[in-house]
Image 1 (cartoon, rainbow, N blue to C red):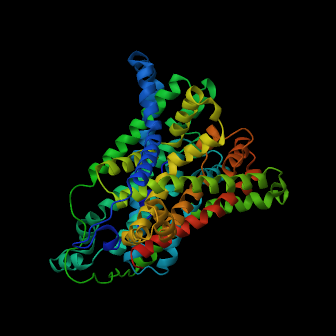
Image 2 (image 1 turned 90 degrees about the horizontal axis):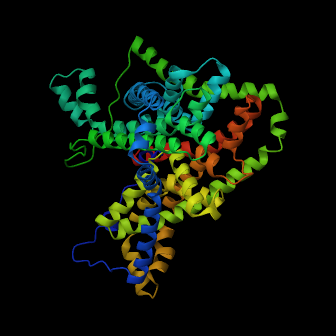
Length: 536
């Protein structure tokens, strides 16, 4: 799925790790080792383009006449209308809620600000389809667009809150002091000084929310709201790799690319860095007085009740009502074991695949490496169902021996989640001085040995953080696993989905609880990294 990359802040990079000192000549890597790494990076990036190439190839093969017949029809118009309404209604609400909570927890004297800040990030530990499960089991009549907007907002607003809160911590209050000295009122300061400096954080968070809205399947299938993702899955189930499903995937990819373009265009060319001597002063907190002080409690309290209270209370209800029986189900422990095995091996393989691109982008930067790196980010923005559909088609036609095997499943995980490992690895390698590699090579080590024994050891914390992000993403992945997993594979996500499809909410509760417990470390990691990066 669409992933949350901008939520993984990179550590500050020491100047000597990226830029040689004056008069220093960087020792070029051995040609053979560099060729191997470049070849590996090229292979990884070409594989990342498989889903996009699949969509283009199928469109060409289908022909214009058939494309017009399949795309320009009432059903596609209905799905497009649902998607646009979902984006238009959900994105502004997520932005408003995320920015408001960020301001309250970072720039006001709201009592318990640190606790409310942690609670605002905590909903990320609950998979989106578990949010939907909780609300549907609480209000069975909940369905359609209003339900989709409600559940989407409470599931995805942390993707806006986290980058905006991190940006607010780093803002220098000197600009606000100058604006206040010119007579601007507090609300004018917020609109004319603070919000413009948050443009990048808001745009990045909104992009993550939008990509999740386009890619999500379980949430909307459960509340009976048709989107392109649910329609593609239903079409595939009924016709198996039919042209209609492929054309729906093409329209969905176009929507994702348009969203990426809109986010890029919204950045503008303004500079956001502070220029001046010295370091920025500590943030000044806005005093909340009178009714505003008590009213400010309502927003985080209501948000926490909806985003955390409803899932936890619903799970508690079903667990208490069912007793010990669901925990004794013979499929539960094997599902947990398979989830851990797939997530651990998938995280290891994905992190290893990211090493060549990460190392070359730091040690040998250039247009080619920037292009190869961009290929991986573009691929990760495509919905998981498109990636799965592409791999199903390609393996059936070109590589049938790996069809519906662990190989195709791990390939899908790598295509979807490699940027999560890449971002953290780049930061770790950038902090490992190139001089140490050169010293190791002067002592007779090959470039690959120097990379393995020196650089990767120093970059181990970044690699571990990236692997943890991939691990937890795989542990909650649903769509690609449903499409590609070998027969007999049952993860916590697919087991949960099987139980809820049978309306057995009590049996599904243990699966949901275990997924939340596995996701809690990711939430803590993101929260900790965002505060460390901001120096708090």
